[in-house]
Image (cartoon, rainbow, N blue to C red):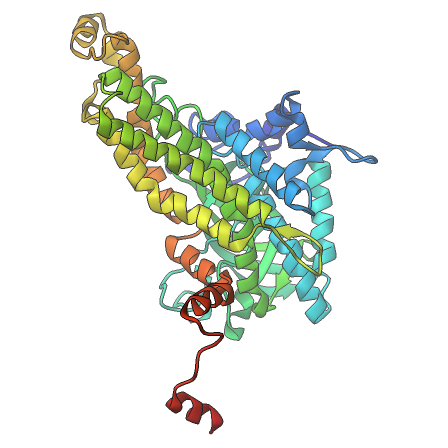
Length: 493
């Protein structure tokens, strides 16, 4: 089939899938007044392949065979990772800081599975790597959208999957049947779930031997019998002035329920090899945290621009503390870019597959930096814009002849801008940092693509502590440390 058009992508979603939104069954996600905002955002990934200005970035054209999406290219160099990162950034900029996410997250999962499946095969003689590569070729050929489907609902977080009172609180293999397996459970926070073609399911954590039924990875079409998707409600309200971003771009998550779903053998990439569940989750994070920083960079740019416009509309752009805050926002934005690019430039090569993955330390630092400082960025924008972002009247009042004159008179700011321009800027800031969308980003920035605690753990685990210690030992004038008498005695015993 080759590359699809945006309309072909939309048509593929009219496939009888089971989707609910606000308690009602959705017949067609592409025409639903809320879900189509997400559909149209995902379609940007397909528009990039058609646009002459971005086609070279978005499309791989092999010497022989059909062209396909760059997201489905196995990364075999740091340059492959850099261009993939740039493609994610480009789509996000078009969508006002939302990644289109038709292929970004799911292909992160495919790359991670490709590496760990090969290692599992080498250890156990399993056939997972060849299945994964066949699936990758299928994605290339059909140009499908694919969603990463990883986070389990988890139940009691203090208990392992096999210890839960309800065994379905992590997705699990219920039983093996002829030609495949039956799975049950649910995955939460799944981005693009209502309007993706495929789910790529990964274990969400390390497993013990008792958890082997939960150590599974597979891919499955979204309209497969037994799959139900409950979409989140979202911040969408009418008005392109009141909500200039929320009404034009979105990535809509859903709770994906697997109710005794049959997964055929050729779609299974891990089935009980519990030792590989944790490494697979970690390898996915290596890719996905760089993708997160790539799409967050354009949103950080948007915060800088909104703060500058707010300052100008209020006539305070030359005030020292305002300039300081905007300068900090610029540094925040550009540091996200620098860290995510550095993760690609310092990429590691897996010795078994030859595939490259981003440097875990720099990749985790990129995600941690933008997440840990996000609320500070929001605070700076809110401080500059003023309390009016929380109390501004609606565009309906602006459009009402009885109240328009009052708003033009009393919402005037700097003489350099009209009252109408200031009104629109106030609403932009409100949409970004003082609305339901703003709240969504405040939570999502912390928890999506891994928590701050997970990033700290991963950074420490991958840090070259030997190099750091050597630097300190050299400064102290030592080549090594001398064991205490007690420790030396214990070790000799």
